[in-house]
Image (tube, rainbow, N blue to C red; front, side):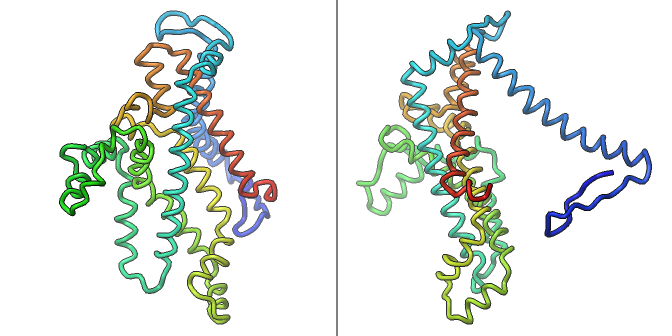
Length: 308
């Protein structure tokens, strides 16, 4: 037999398999995704944790060295610099992606807005593009000599705004965050629109009868009703931004210096450029630990204890 959640409640509906053939089919269908998850997530995770306690150059037998890799990381200024860069980029992405997508979602639910399907498709389209492609596009946009951005600023008489967008350490984190925000705003817009669409229309109709405006309905009805969705979106956004790699590798490769390097890029460079596979595995484990810690903190800040 199998337990399935009933629609709209916590009551469980019990269904029995008719014969052994159905039972075997159910187990096979469950085993396939479990095997994929096991071989693509669980085994590599524990393998990385194991390698993080070793000294290994990618060939030969790994040498167990205990916590030396973690001590090395904690003593390196570069590690804490890329950690700070990663957190700052993640904060920018949460503010940009979730904030902008929420505003767009409010606009998408307005009755007076025309061609909603077209707008959704255009905004969502960058989300399906490869991050490498996005990196190349924005690298061309930011180019200090022939880039579209500086050319446009010069054409409209704003020469004072022209900057070496990818070569200035003071603005590089903001610069590289914009393409990441731009690419995934559409993804979170779809999530927000779905959550807002699930709010019963009767509540809005009653608010309109009481004289509530569009802004008041958004602040006092919509936001409280989609709080859980908003919390999940923030956690997903922050955790995803902690792993950002492709955009930065293409646009700056962590430069100038290490001013735009992230933990994922630092892990790649440590592992493959310097051949320190054990130390690179330790960076990957620390990235996982920081992501889990950030998710836990976000849950607490957004009232996670009240929902337990």
